Amino acid sequence: MSEQGPQARGTTVRAALEAALAAAPEQGLTARELSAAVGIPEKDVAEHLVHLEKSLKAAGGRLVVLPAECLACGFIFRDRKRLTRPGACPECRATRIEPPAFRVER
Image (tube, rainbow, N blue to C red; front, side, top):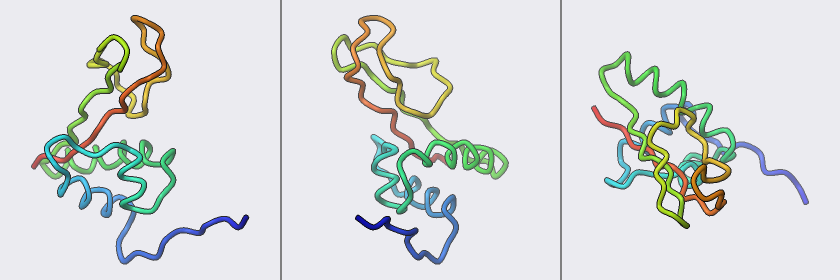
């Protein structure tokens, strides 16, 4: 099996992420959806979002994080600072977690 190289694009990864997030629906886009839209590995999305958040703040915009939610008990990870999906719920220890979603507001 051969590794897939990076997709050719005419813009930077963060600019492509910003464009995808700006066009995101009200419910936002997950890291998996952003990965598919921009053509980068899902595990790299959170790192790029941290930097994009700083750039947006400097330009008067903001990255909106719609928090992850436990599918078993409904616990919402409101105070979580990391942009990755949590591994387990602190309330019920279930691992079925709806990942956080993101969108841009200007």
